[in-house]
Image 1 (tube, rainbow, N blue to C red):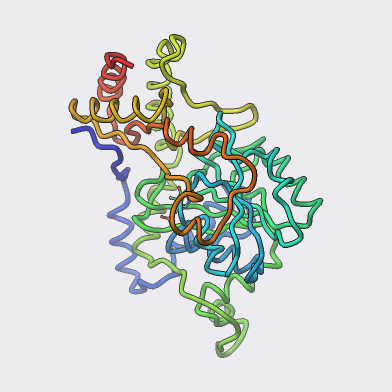
Image 2 (cartoon, rainbow, N blue to C red; image 1 turned 135 degrees about the vertical axis):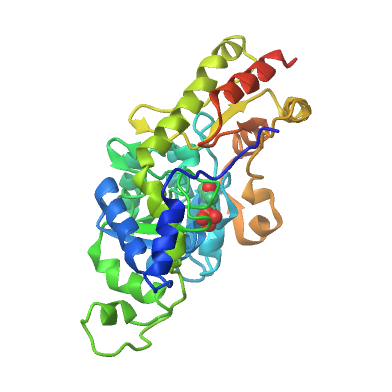
Length: 375
Ligand SMILES: *Cc1c(COP(=O)(O)O)cnc(C)c1O
């Protein structure tokens, strides 16, 4: 059986976990959390990095720091993971979904402005498959309407848009280190941002509403309950696993790109014959080979293809059921404008196995089986 995903184990993970245990401090913000944060600040050229227990939690922090209030509206694509919306719904926001672009499956930047009302407070672009949304346009709209931009860069770690790391362009960026993502710590994530003015609020929010971070830096002699807060720190054992992965970031990237390019070459003629469509990476975007997907004619063909691949020992996967047509989406949100592509494209999309240890022989085999399929 060729799995759809396997978490990578690239070298020093167990050694660093052992070292974290030997440090005698297992809670958050120790040696490995600091190493991970410093590494990301340098690599992604970002001023503030807060390791979190998940991308969902990073999004929750971003929604709080953006001061989202009950009744506020937040614009996002419907073609995304539930967490993108959950984080804002928890603050009482109404979700306004707009359609996606069929080429990248990202929010259509040309439809955003029409969805803005006097209640709109934020835009949440989701960088699907680690391919950047049209951030120049989105930032320009946000500036004009005085809106916050929260990037859901769960899939966009170490991917770039016109030279800038995804997640570092808007007011806040949210990364995921879940085991299905490029770099992992099992469950985990990070909140990143450029403006130092948010640092203190973010520290308090992440540390149960206390100023404990200041206390640890020796800036105050006792810590107190200051504001609303929760517990968003991952343990040092998780951070140790992640640090081993970040150190081997280029190695992981190279391998994933090899798999991506392998599929892309082997499936080129199927696209020429009009049987499938392959993913598109617009100019100015450097993607991170998070995902390889193809699009077939419709859901009927996709269902047949999934069954056929499974019979041949391959585990493919479809992806999101659009949020606006799910029970919570109907309750907490509305779709602005027409759903031209969200539902149609989501039903055509099929993700192929993609992970660090996938062998090129397996890529050959998977491509061969797809080529044999009667579309
Ligand atoms: C994976 C993912 C998330 C959630 O990440 P967790 O770390 O599991 O909370 C959110 N948004 C998108 C687009 C994702 O792909």
